[in-house]
Image (cartoon, rainbow, N blue to C red; front, side):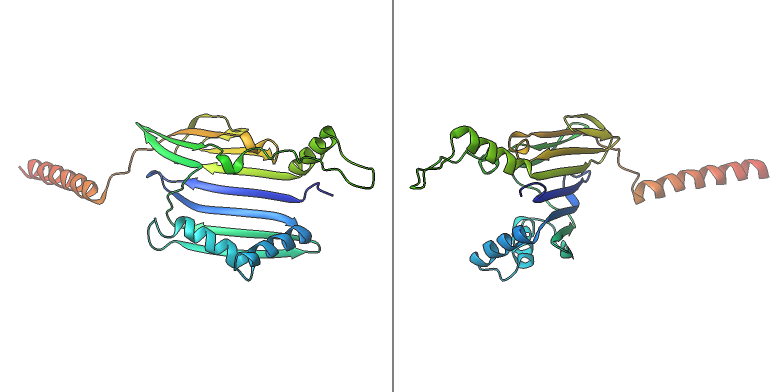
Length: 225
């Protein structure tokens, strides 16, 4: 019943200034879980899941970052399954539990679990008048099964080549982590990348062109003599 009930995939691109751009979140789930999300959104005053998600992501990033950020939400239904996609384009400064900062010529990405992502406690069984019950072991197994039914994949793109990381896979400037609800509760993500040198600005190009022009004129005059 719980197998494959919820899959979350997140894509994040870190720029050279330490801000995040081109963020995307994909949520794959069943109509039953979607119904629970819909009910939760309505209890918090949002008529739809779409409005709930857009409102929360704009609160998180919209007020403290550059103007011109855009957010989009889309749903794709296929039978009993639904795929929700939330995209954000612009320049965002992430907050806890994500930290992005520069250390010399390197950019550091860190994700550290907070209290809200602490392991789920095992429910305490309560007596019932029908003579059946669950012991601690069976309740723990049920909790593990439910958490294992949640998958989480995180794809990160850094501004330069990644030189150190605890990711499951690293390829040049890209890293990826693959977890489930049980393992992600205590998972810390870390990546350290080089920061490419800035390309010459417009003024530098003009200065360079001027040097070549002077050299060319001087050479032409020598030939005329």
